[in-house]
Image 1 (cartoon, helix red, strand yellow):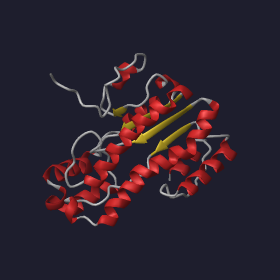
Image 2: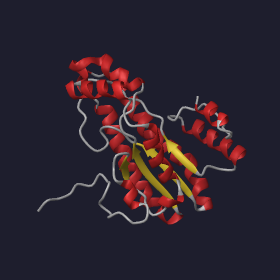
Image 3: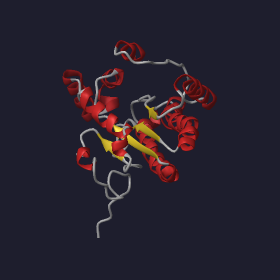
Length: 230
């Protein structure tokens, strides 16, 4: 679908099938991209699953573990494959898609929340490691959107998902959630040279991020660090 939309907009697109849990497959995909397009300038780590819905003890261990593998190790594998080329040319952008649970507790969605929180911390660590190579790494939380995951929550019911999750999913099914244009604006900013001074951050689509287009953020802002009150 995305490939067709790009081509209809007069762009060039290449569709490659790969399992993000398999490092060799991801590296092969990046190699193919490099041959066709000359390298990877922007990596968006968007592959993800919601995982089991319900209390952790009642979830199937295999499904719980697979959620971590896809959501966290998939991001790690993608970065392993794309980063060497970015470091070599001293330019690159990596955007990891975070989500609900990455910055707060999300009961009954422990696998998803744990994986997304881990992705944010991984982004912070990796950003510091590659900062001197002029590669920026950030996490982006796109907000609620109506997808098949919304239907999964509603199908699970209030007993397993919890009343707050059901209420939010019902609202998203009605209004569609955050408008795509608003999500695209943040993604384009993080993928552009306008954000060269921003790295290792978790930005939500509803944050006042535009104020930082020309100024630096304080080091503790938009991270997983706790604010200690004395």
